[in-house]
Length: 96
Image 1 (cartoon, rainbow, N blue to C red):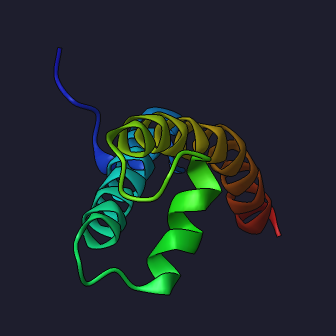
Image 2 (cartoon, rainbow, N blue to C red):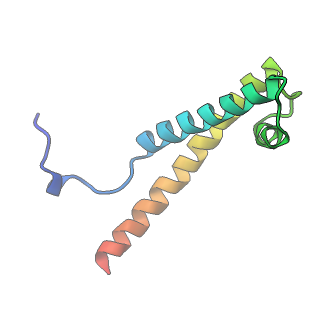
């Protein structure tokens, strides 16, 4: 099968690519904040981001695991809501 030309492709954001992109982004941010919180140079602002996704002690391995899981869950939740809403609004913009 050949790819359809650009004019025939549906426009909008796919849930799968958006979910993957958001999950990777949130996991990278969470991992970076966890590294700072686990280091001797911990900054207070990293703890607030970490506590958003985990209730474990700051800098612990349990916090990294739990926070990573809930960061990915939060990313997919956002993707499942954002993509259809964006696609609906983008379609309405083409109609108007």
